[in-house]
Structure formats: C-alpha cells, structure tokens
Length: 335
Ligand code: COA
Image 1 (cartoon, rainbow, N blue to C red):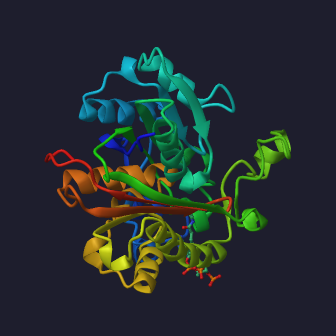
Image 2 (cartoon, rainbow, N blue to C red; image 1 turned 180 degrees about the horizontal axis):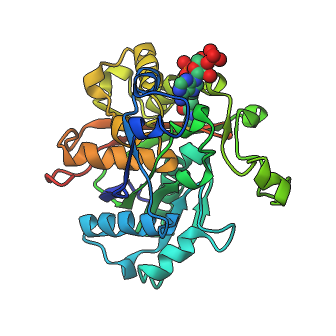
C-alpha cells in the first residue's frame, strides 16, 4: 500500500483583544513587571471577554485555518480540539465547534493533555489520514486559562493567557509533512501541576470553591526542571526517528511557557537562538494553544520555507510531553 504523507495545508490563530500587562497585574497581586520579565520573559497576556468561552476562540482560529487551506467546513472529516479549559465537562468543545462552523460530516472529540495537547492531537489527527480513514482533519488548540486562575496566587496567575491556534491536516507530497513524533507521559509526578477539584475525585462543592480548588496549583520549580530535562530529550528522540540530527533542524517551535526554560533547553541541544521561535512575551503561556499560535506567527513572518526540517515540542501537566518533526510542505507566502 502506498504510504500517505500528511502535512499542514492551512494554519490560523486567534487572540482575544483584551491585553493584561504586568503593570496591571502588579496592582492585583504582590509582583512587578521586572520580576515577571526577568523570571519568565512574559510582558503581557490576552484575556477573553466574559462572553467568550473556549469554543468561541477555537472557532475563530479554526475558520482562519480552513480559509488558509481553501477547505470548506463541509469537507472536514474530523475535528479534534485540544484543551484543558473546555466549555463544559460535556458536550465536548469539538462538537460545539462542529455545529457552529457547520462541519456537517465531521466526527469530533476533545483531547486533554494540558499544554502538550495540541501536539498530541496533531499526531492523532495525522494517523487518521495516514491510515487512509480520513482525508481532511481540523486540529485546534484552544484555552481560556484566565477562568481557572487563582487571581490571588502570584505563583501562577502571572504565567498564563488565553488564545487559540489551528491547523488543517491533509495528504501532502511524498517525503514532506510529518516525519515522526515522540509522545510521552510521567503520571507519577502529576500532582506538581493540577486543578484539584471539579472532577470525580473531588466534585464541586461550597468548600472546593471557598478553598479555590478549581484553579491551577503548581510546584513551579519541579515543573521547570521537568521541562528543561524533557524538551531536549523529546526533540532528539523525534529527530532520531526521522533519521535526522540536531544539525539538520532548521527551525523549532517550542511550547511558550518561559524564556528561561526555552533558553536552557536550547543550550542543551546546542541550537542557536535564531532557529527558535518565541512570542510568549506577548501572550504568556496559552497552554495547548501556544504551539499552533507560535507556528502560525512564524509562518506568517516568513521564518519557515518549503523543505525546512522543523520541530514542534511541548510539555505540560500529566506530566506529559510531545514532539513532532516535519518537513515543511508549503511554499506560498502565507505558509
Ligand atoms: N512576583 C514576585 N515574586 C514571586 C512571584 C511573582 N509573580 N512568584 C513567585 N515569587 C517569589 C516566590 O514566592 C519566591 O519568594 P521567596 O524566595 O520569598 O519564597 C521567589 O519569588 C522565588 O521563587 P522561585 O520559585 O524560586 O522562582 P523561580 O525562579 O523558580 O521562578 C517560576 C518561578 C514559576 C517562574 C518558574 O519556576 C517557572 O517558570 N516554572 C515553570 C512553570 C511553568 O512553566 N508552568 C507551566 C508548564 S506547562
């Protein structure tokens, strides 16, 4: 059977308009612009309007990716939404997107792998195409993390932001597109980054609300160490599987959590800064949306050209990690 190669045929992103700067945050909690910039690289983040839920951001990004791919919603076979902040426990956010964009024949489901979610979802979506089951898959990473922040906890509330990014996956030319991926998990250390209540272990109650157990709790130092250890390792593993070496890598789009994490990981990999994309200064950590938003901006800025070997790498709660290596399959100026 002929091998089916899978590439990105369209990409788009959406950021809510409202900006929350570090100076504004320092009026809400005991922090400062200097501290946040020095320790994280973040200068501001976007915050969704009260009326906007995750599906609203996902739809905007999804429509932009479809337009970029010149694909209509009716042609889409499958929608996967990666998110840790779905509209509801159920129905899935993907089903809400499916209905609202009128993707009449699409199957739809959510994936929750926290900040690694988009890369996991992209690998999953690609498998549906390479196995011959589907032809066009819309993969979206979308988050409204501002809704699960404890705005009194300076350890976490300065880090995250809202946003969405999306890609359309389709068959592409031979030897282009996704070459390999590396997915992994370490559930043993899952409690270092957690939203403790609201699930079946600790359902919502007056106490869980009072104790702020519906927001993110994090051991920042443990996550930092895990991230630095994992990003390089996973990138190398995925490159290995593709038969490539670090010298062959033209561009890397890492999860946008902290510039110090990215810098330390890249130093370990011996990868020069020019080959690594960052935009977390503008958006903070948008969790599963961070990789597709960064990839979209890198493409629109002309940083990636046809034939480039690129890697997408993410890490997050779970703990979890995910990398994809691909040979960029598009050559036009819009990506
Ligand atoms: N403003 C001012 N001070 C702050 C602060 C803030 N927003 N947040 C924490 N501090 C304080 C701490 O309370 C601590 O004070 P103390 O020494 O009096 O106890 C001090 O700053 C240093 O804290 P520390 O935890 O050592 O800082 P750090 O250099 O490790 O940076 C993080 C903290 C959270 C920025 C860093 O650990 C990190 O980025 N971790 C990874 C988080 C992440 O990416 N999570 C998402 C993964 S998907």
